[in-house]
Length: 226
Image 1 (tube, one colour):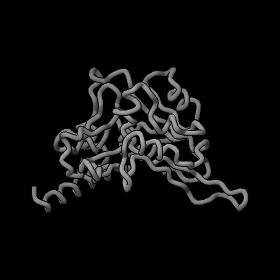
Image 2 (image 1 turned 90 degrees about the vertical axis):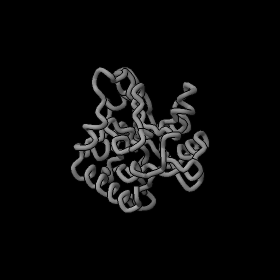
Image 3 (image 1 turned 45 degrees about the vertical axis):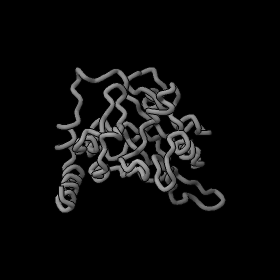
Image 4 (image 1 turned 135 degrees about the vertical axis):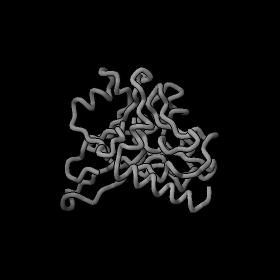
């Protein structure tokens, strides 16, 4: 594929998905009911508890060997609210949403980007990724990057091949000093993450695109939802 045709393809796919929403994603990515498994991992970020210490970012980088210059997880600080000395900040978690209808999966030409049918986790087969960056171009959350060493697409995968594989919680959850992060199976009504979503006001970002994200936020309440 020439550079020109690649650019045209990426631009066209990005425009189609971000402006028309479901025409590509839902037809290509919806999982038939009979194939759905019992687990759907999700995470809640409690903005009222987050203090912006970035311990989660450091733990993610260490456990998953993320090189400097790129990040699977970012904590974004808002402008200050209130007057000094009664100033407050909102902290927003920016990371993969693990969308049930993931546009990054729909456009991948090699099958490298996929939704794990057993857990709902969106991940990347590094051995299949050719670094074309189609997935990066169409991700409406802008959370994918090319790994500088592997030269393949990378992002948060809920520590699927590190902590989660060892029966632990994701590194960000384990390291959070204020318990602002909750992780678990949304399909289990008795799980902590399910109860957290039921018992609190929550929001998810860019729902209008039909991505069905599995990252929930308990709002800080003083800023604007993204």
